[in-house]
Length: 180
Image (tube, rainbow, N blue to C red; front, top):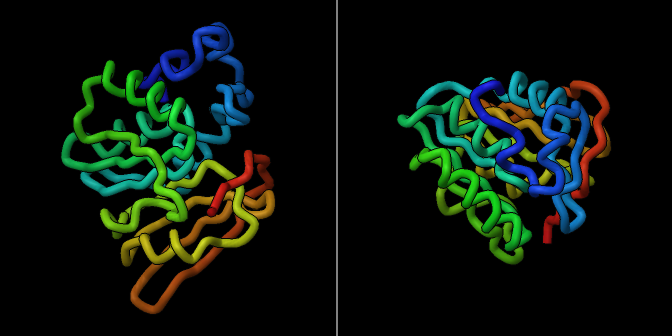
């Protein structure tokens, strides 16, 4: 997390708060998540160099950039965000880092994630779902891991040849996941 300056992914009016260990409003009803929460999610996700990663609800692009550092140039990170203005802002911040293997795309209407580029080894979801979204489970590769808040519980979803396993890892609050 020291490799990616949080301030670069915040609106200019909020950059002075980058060291604050709490969520920071980034506009459009969205937040840049608390660093401690992001660190916990990344630990659960257990991203390895060279993996293909999907970042759903990429917001400011900070988590997308962090994932890019973890997969390295042999990997791929696709961030998906539904707010066009945040897509533009996060692309600018990511472009300044010069990481060609990391990108942010504007979410497609009616589509959760980015199915045509799946399956993904890891999926990070930074918005709270009401139920575990089957559309994202389908995009998870065999031997993959997904971390997603569902009904205020942080879930780790692992997938193997026989199906999925879900475990809970604490209570968290997030903005709602828009699934439609």
